[in-house]
Length: 112
Image (cartoon, helix red, strand yellow):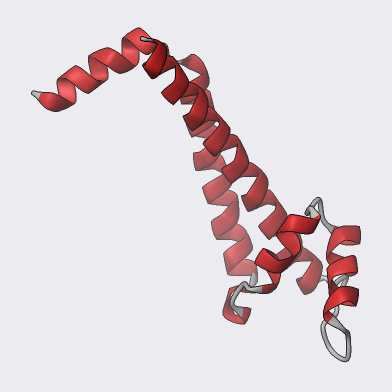
């Protein structure tokens, strides 16, 4: 049961990080669409500073955000990210509410 509890805790951490990242990504795209982050004639460091000023991104997120495909910088992607956030929040609620015993029973059902 302690292993199952650790699995639950790990899944909860993963889901919470997923929500954080999706929100940062959405903020980044929205800031670009709203001309708060400008790339043209800017150095990478300057763009990174704009990202940090206009989003809740951390220094570790900046390079990851800069690798996003330019075709993803659309309002459609913002809507898709909103849906993904809702799903990730559902995962957090699930992992918060579950218990090792419930997980054990679900694992047994999957085996059968």
